[in-house]
Picture 1 (cartoon, one colour):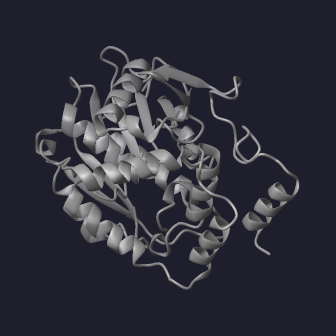
Picture 2 (cartoon, rainbow, N blue to C red; picture 1 turned 180 degrees about the horizontal axis):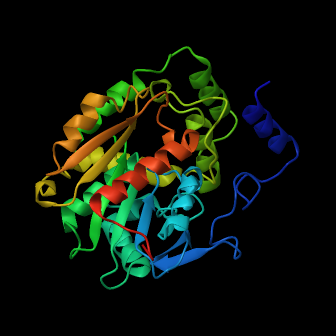
Length: 327
């Protein structure tokens, strides 16, 4: 019997309340006072930073929407190069505070990121974004809105963003969802688990999302022998942002051509959803962009190939003159 469905049966058999904090998924910052945190913009984020706060700042943006930064922690190695490396679970994600779906908007997320940047990189402190998947889209939306943010943003590393416009998102989702086998094991597991637990609160919804996304989409070519670790998924924010994109549409390319710094796109050559053509299309929206391919890996490149990924980031920092502290 598979492990995750077995866990569901054990929980039900032992009469544990799945909605009680800590029984089904890890506690959030509002439930566990020991977790590192940052209170901003009417929410409490799970956040931590590594390195000297006086050094140039690297702000890491995780994927999803709705995932967390745990699989991106190999980027902590950049702290030894003289950077202040910031990790945070976005609003409603990972171990950050949960909210009702009605509060979410793309404008609210931009406000959150403004305050995260202002907290960790105050004044004229230089910074670079490293965004993975949805995080690369998030970084781009911020750059499209704010440009270099008064000269503070010196560059960005974007790992396989899905889309910068609604039309690109529709095409990306077709590639992603079209790779599933309708009669395969992964979709059967999702359907099976849904018979025993409804997504009627955050804990249950997050747990079901973790089951659904555990192996990624086939098109992403994740390594089943080396799965990405996670703190906790955020089902409500995931659904809310996808519904916002469908209802309102978006275009985060309208001002990208005015962003002067060179942007690095990093991709794995096995990922069929974020394929080379799609990355080239998005890179063309920036004034200066380059694409580097990591061979033999899919979407989980940071986790599966950390040394190569970090070295590509270091090489990029050297090319744009973004030196660590004391260098």
